[in-house]
Length: 115
Image (cartoon, rainbow, N blue to C red):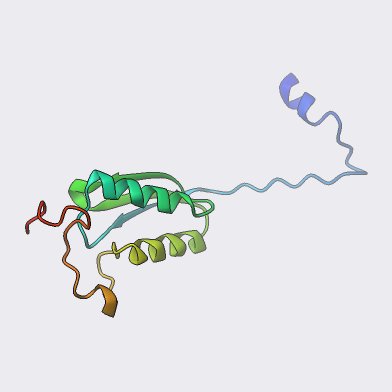
């Protein structure tokens, strides 16, 4: 109680309005169409963490899955677009004309992943 009291000590309800915004983090689990190695996973992590409000990026190369937290649907959309641009579209997404010729193997070690 004392700690909470000391936080609000300098504020008056007449002169200052305090607004508390509570934002809930959502978790996305994205299965991508292309396998990736640890090195590619690191690149995916770096790219996603550059997007505001995307955090806790974890990748699972064995299942071609990327997991991260986000606040708004717009952040999720940016992340999905980033994955597609990097050559890792979500399962179920129709590949663009530029990516149709790509194999579903890792971009930096194409011979390691045989279907």
